Length: 308
Length: 302
Image 1 (cartoon, each protein chain N blue to C red):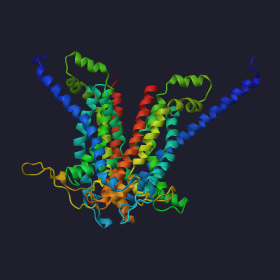
Image 2: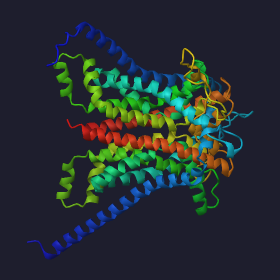
Image 3: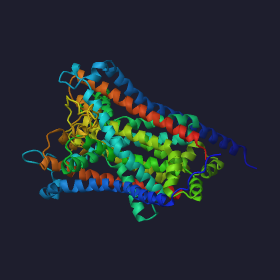
Image 4: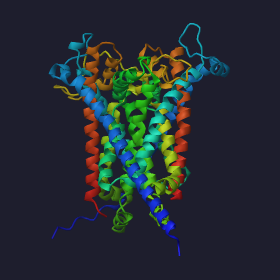
């Protein structure tokens, strides 16, 4: 028989354990909410300083030496055109690489090398993509400090995100789907095109949105290639009223973009420029946060709708 | 009944198959080409710099002023800035990220976790230039109220904000690896009478160790490579100091500072940013590979 004191000690110990569990639960909860609170404080701060600055004039004006007259017209047009280049390059190549690695690649050293290479690329600092673009696109290929150079730099930067998202959503499809397609005589590509890609659209779209959101907010690579901050004109329009209707001159135009314009304003002294910076920041963060929220909701829906 | 379709042409199918294999394989090669592009550009453009500047001067000089008439090439002045800002960021992100990971994996209600995890991920979706604004114009003034001698540009506030930015990396990777620790281990420890916190700290955390370590290493890589926050809030003057209160330029901030000026192709300024870029690439490559190997080891062990 165990003595009375043994049981009393055990009970004390249990109570102490439950108390420390409770304490940790509280600490964890407080820290979680506190960390989210930083995001809230950041948004609140931007809104307080910048919200009153956002109006039609701000969206439709070029940058100016006078803070009150300055706007983000060339910046948001630049960002839009940059994303056109980035998406046009990163999505097809990312999809192809993802499909190849997940569905086609033999398990050998070369494949393992490509995989390690992609894992490393995902962690290369963004500014190094800017240095590559400066040396390679701007000077070697003579694209100049243009939308094309900037868009390509951002495309290289987000390529790993698209590849990884494509692979992960292909991986969730059970192999029975592939086997069923093969059993009916489909080639590998037919299985991919008619079955695997349609089932993984949700996951791939999520990855593409996240990649674009990352690219929109990047400024370091664009600064490195020498994107000017004072651009008081718009690139030539991609569409024309006369034949051939489409023009690619805009690709070689100098540009500015939202994050660069914001950086320019942040680094200037003076309350007024800083409220311009806050306004640009508010628009920028509004775009990236809503894109990310869309991606999260999309991922949830894709997970809920498909039950293998 | 649907009308019978003509028999598909197998030859066409096979032709398309052969074509697509090559198209897709080319996609895989592009990722290798990007790496090659980075490495070759860094090497060729910084080559003249390393030819001109002996390694001895990189180590022995105490100032980094490659653009001055009498240049100094002490890269330690830049490395010190990177080291301090990274240190401050990790001092915030590792404890905070780990506690959040333990809490979310072991303690939080599943519904709360499903709601909080994506919210936390939003923290890493904030553009870094916005974080820079926040550090310079909100956090620094706040810290100045506590410590009035804090200069306008300070590695402390840049590092702290950078820490908040990388919390989600630590939390989400850490939580994933803790959740993949088998339930049996936890149940064994509970059966021996341990409480939740004891099980978390003595069974789950050691079990998820290499996964957690991978999260830390990748967080270091992020912090070392982060550019805009430090360029905006930590200052652009290289300075050999270990004091987080001070302002100093990091490796990345130097590249930004030089890029902002006029930069003729082939000038010493142009070469110097590729040289510092090469140093940055080697540092992050080391951390990225270590992180990748640790993660793979963890997945094999589980």
